[in-house]
Image (cartoon, rainbow, N blue to C red):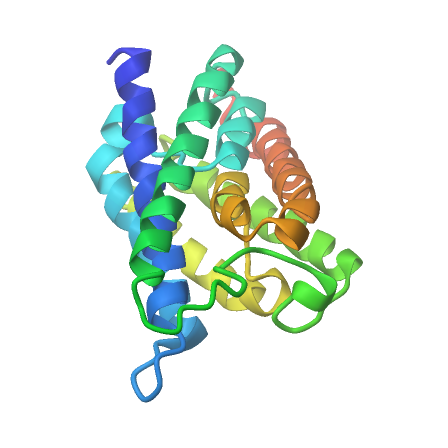
Length: 233
């Protein structure tokens, strides 16, 4: 499969992740009487990854996330030279999803942009958690997410079940992290909504690039040098 086709798959997949996950948060989470709440939003994010992993995993690997891409590079599973293509595709998909979501949400009478599912800390954290709390949460949860990805896609793992483990893993991560930062673990997912919110969301966006990337790289290195099967075995 050519790099162009794989990048296009990443655009579509990341669009679905941001549109589905953030869309659930913006359009459905707070609806009086039928709102899906944080549990529903967590499931939405998990289901987007699960469905796309089966749909495009065999095409692009279904990264949908710059942190996943750099983590797979650190883990020796992906060539570093392709990082720019994948990250650009993921950002494009996230931006298009945020734009589509904005067009839908703004069609409701009395529309208020609000946080628009953006990620934040301090006054912009759902639970008013500090910068340090947000940093530790995002690094730790991204580390665990990449560990799940690397372990479930290992050639020693049961074949065909990786999307289920990854989707459920992302659901659990959201259940833990939404109160802290609205949960990112994905710089593209954070960037899409931040482009529309502007102001504070853009000012705090650095954390949601730095922390997921750091957690992913550490996970990739740990898995590669501690858990990866040695060729002599």
